[in-house]
Image (cartoon, rainbow, N blue to C red; front, side, top):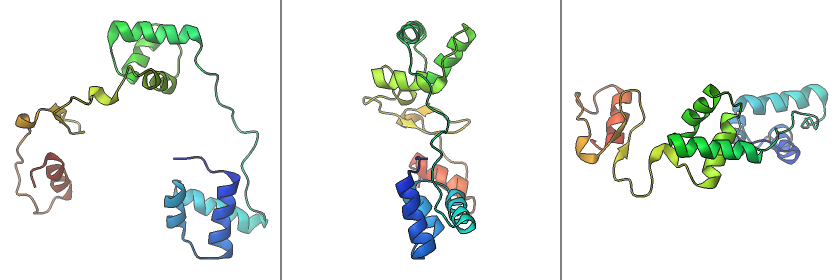
Length: 164
């Protein structure tokens, strides 16, 4: 979800409360926030009579990675060649406290890491799920049901597999 700005909060407030030409669901989709957050903003306006603003004293961003931390991440990456989360766990086991989102951002920025090991030359199909993993096209499992009869989850899975 994106962060709202004071300007976007004023825009939401104006269209939902004053003009009444927008709904909470449309505003939520437009600004990529939850409907509940939109309702909170409009309720705050109705209760106080002033449009809500962001708290300027909210928690600041943490410090960026130091050069020492970058060197440590690079060493572990060269040694283990793991994804960001697994690399973060290895760093944690070794006693380093580096936030996992910063490890992920650093690996993405340096180009060392791509999503799930799938590069441009990947010819297989990635199917997320607890029992399904990475398959080559000839290894795709065949469904053990009749598609289109009932279970929407199975039907969705079969569409992902390209069987429908």
